[in-house]
Amino acid sequence: MAVPYRKIGIIREGKQPADRRVALTPTQCQEVLARFPDLDLTVQRSEVRAYTDAEYAAVGARLVDDLNDRELIIGVKEVPKDMLLPGKSYLFFSHTIKEQVHNRGLLQAILSKGIRLIDHELLTDPHGTRVLAFGYWAGVVGAYNGFRAWQLGHGGPELKAAHACHDLEELERHLHAYPLPKDLRIVLTGGGRVGKGAMGVLERAGVERIPPVEFLSTLNDGPVYTVLGSSDLYERTDGAPFDKEAFHRDPSGHRSRFLAYAQKAHMYLACHFWDPRGPKILSASDLQDPDIGLEVVADISCDIGGPIDCTLRSTTIASPFLGYDTRTRTEVLPGTPGSITVMSVDNLPCELPRDASDAFGRDLMERVLPHLAGKDDEGMIARATIAEDGHLTERFQYLGNYVKGD
Image (cartoon, rainbow, N blue to C red; front, top):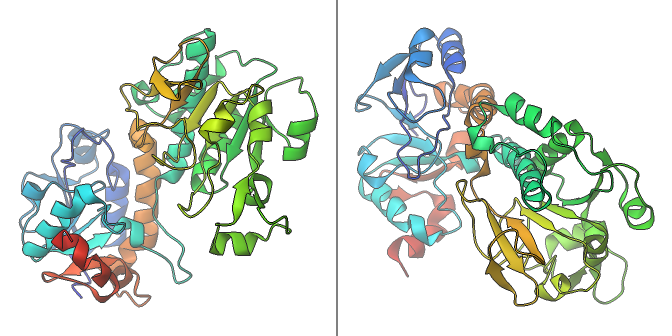
């Protein structure tokens, strides 16, 4: 295994559309050089980053155009095939472990060029918990976009797009200036990183959290939200008591209890992890229920063809909303009378690149870099290595047929 690394480079993101995030911010580069004096760190020049070359230069980071002398190259998103340097080690989100068809060519190129591929998604502590993720920021932007979708249908001060805000502080200023209706009711699924990001926005916007049972049974005199756990959201089809551990082992044999909440809510923020073996949460039939109250669905999890039938496709940062006609089950223009406004952007953290990069880079510096620049006694880097020396590592042999296109 090619660790420890001494010559590390931060790559210019090359995937299109451009991603403005970065693995380490200028201040973090400065800290890295102070904490790891034997490390040689360079930053490839970029015109698209949320942090400018001038900001890196101001803290003494060495800017380069060429990364050929680097041992390890760190990025955020997939590196385009024509930017891959043979024989190097790379660390980025490859999106290949689930055999994503659109990245088969990327993994083929990595193997043919003898590259060592380490994947951010696979970096875990000894207990198997991921140490790097952007999910929190997906929740933040997704919740804010939910309010933008609401504003689209109800008017009031226009909420500035998140990607046009300098940072989270500016985003929250715009949200605080928006007059939330006192009867607004929001239901949220998922309590992980994504859910916590969304909840933080709701709390700071002055939306009160109430228990699920209260959400169903009482009227509110101010904006409220509730968070549904798996026991609130699902029940067994055989009538037996719900068993959370059994459900997470195998979610088949269960059905959704979400319709009752959809009848009481105006907005749904979907922040859950969904197992394809499990039931739908909000079906097309549910959406045709005459008592449904939903006007906005912000599908932050964005599983196309998954548990929410009004999520017809991924939307984009530039055009984040679609309208869903519950009667015809088809897409219409957002804001069409009688439709539900759906937000299903699948790269939400890109809308707050400075904040998202700062949080991500902090975890990278504190929790991963010591393993890259020193002894990897815990095996963190080994566990996260998909390919090396032209071959798939033992743990990822199952990707063999995927690479071949079988």
